Length: 55
Image (tube, rainbow, N blue to C red; front, side, top):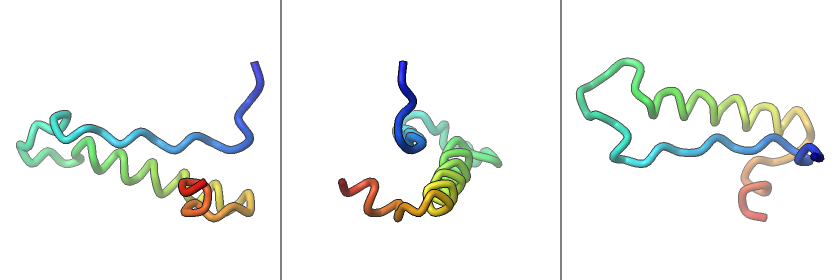
């Protein structure tokens, strides 16, 4: 099995996956943290995250 050329972006949780009880951290907090790390890693590899998602 071959590795993808770039890391795969994190999967955004569905709205129903949040219990809406004001948890801290919320499942969406984890997602946005992971998304920031993913974007940073792509920039380190010389790729614009927006271009990667658009393409």
